[in-house]
Structures are given as C-alpha cells and as structure tokens.
Length: 220
Image (cartoon, rainbow, N blue to C red; front, side, top):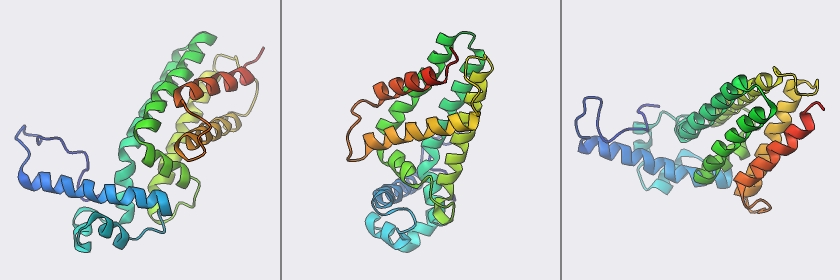
C-alpha cells in the first residue's frame, strides 16, 4: 500500500496532523468504506475499481493516488482484524503452554473465544467477507484473505500442539482436530453474521463450542 491506513492525529514528531494528511486519511477511508459493502455483496473478484470509485464518488485517478491496485485495498481492509486475530491466537497459544491442569486448558480456550467474539460483532462486514472468501483461490485481490486464513490456521495448529503437551487429548492428528474446530467456529460466525440467524449470542455460542469440542477430545 502506498500509505498506511492507521494514522494517528499526530505525526512521529508529535506535531498536529496537517490538512493534507487529514484529507488523505479521509479519502483512504472513503474508498475502503465504498469497497467493503460491494465486496460483501458481489465478491472481491467481481467488483471493479470503477465500481469502487463510483461508490466513493471520486475520480478513478484518485484511487491510484492512494492504492496500488485492488489487492492493496483489500490488504488495507483486512489489516486491522488480521492484527487482532493473530494477537488473540498467539495469546491463546502462550496461555495453553503455561496451563498445567484441565481447567486451565479450558480457560485458555475460552479466553480466545471471548476475545474473538467482539471482533465478529464490531467488524461484522469485514469478518463476513473473510468467511465468504477465505476458501476461494488465492489469486488477484483475494491473496490477502488467503494469507490471513493461512496465518489463522498455523496459529490454531500451534494452540492444538500446545494443548496436547499435557497428554489430556485423544491421539488424534492435530491437523484434523484443528481444521474441524476452525470449520465449526467459522460456521457459527457465518450464521450469526448472515441472514440465517440461528445464533443470537456469539460469545455464548463460542463458549458452548469450546466445551463441546474439548469434551469430545479429552481422554477419559
């Protein structure tokens, strides 16, 4: 991306942000805000830059002043939740590595669920877009989505390995159980964010899912 989307009101020297910087930041947001609902409705690959600038009410040349291409814009859209998701999963792996008892293991998984639930609620459209696109071919502007999906899978697998060090789980291939959990979590999130509406409370649903999965994996 040509410029960072996450600017503060002051530059690194502590000076107030100037008018040009404020206008630039506003235009970056304007383009992102126009693109996101289009992506959700039609899919990333079907939406054109012409569609985006028309929705934003700006000239096409303005797009290329702020983003290299559509992939660059998608990368900017996903950057905030990418950081939050990866940080939550990394903290979960660290907590599982420290866990010494089964209640501590359960607590570590529940903490991750509670950290992820607000992301789903607060970033509804971008999470829905992720769920719609993360299994599509990693081509063109979808590449940032697939990179995030790969990072999530790697960290979730790390959590599984950390949990298994205590010897409380059945001898199941960690990749199998990890992918099963990811699939279940994503299905719950999609239900909550889409029009299906079976899940009303994502935090309660996430906690119930943790209990259901871990109870099934635990060695008696």
